[in-house]
Image 1 (cartoon, rainbow, N blue to C red):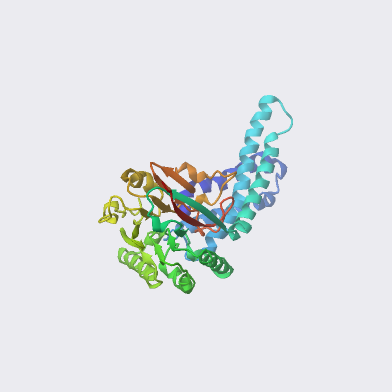
Image 2: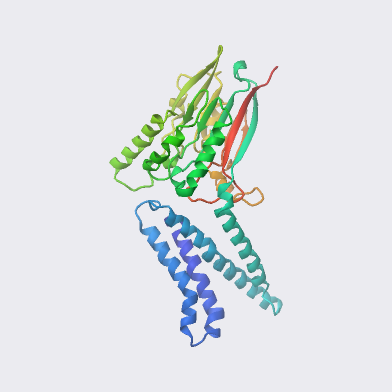
Length: 387
């Protein structure tokens, strides 16, 4: 995980310390090298910590505490130094150009650092303990009459390996919150695990408690393919088979480019599920929809919302798509998340060409952090527009 941003983090660790040493400590503590060394010490620790995390074989260590502590220290130490160095440097140039005695950049830096620390502490504590129940009433002209009022409770991105120790109570709360909705169908949008299916086994009794009239349906997310372990291909394949087996042993209807039909009276609705879009590139829309009538009302589960623009909307065959994957970015300011730069549909409801998509921010994450994007479950009630 850290290897993807390895160079920027190392630069953020080293360059600010160089700036401070050149502009402040060298002249102030001339001859007292040990005081300068004390300033460099946290950066040296973070440098070694970064190298150690990059050196492991897997995407993240098996004990996620190392990652969560690392990310907290980055927010506590690295980013504040980088913010101050950048603002101070720009402020120094401005003050010299405008012939000012005060470096306004230092004042701006202090404000930004205080905001940074507030976001860090809130997002690592209170933000992770919140839960929002998003209620959406969706209206369709082609919904069969007997499914008017049909209730789907959708949740995604559980990443159950992150719910260890005292956090297990949060997962228990989430399951209880889903069950209290009295759903006709519970749908899970993928990423049940972080790295390996062994994370699922301790919480299987809890996940088995999910209840709905028509059961629990699920698809795989990118993390469920065990791509992040860097094991031998046969071990990765065995892990993929195990995560499939565990979900089916819990009584979930896991859809792998397949579908099934729900019946009410003389009406029917198709629930389809693709394998994950893009990486690994295993989704197959044609196979998923094989045998589905052109006029059928289709609810599609697809972990990655990019599939909606790519082939779901152009097909004009899917009424409602349920996706996750983005986590809503897990951080947002005034409703705007940086993940919007990557995903056109990052969180919430979207409608295009008669097709609707719900993207859930999910209930978990590899990194246990939430600010402005609380964990959520989505209660979706289908309504028929009467002519």
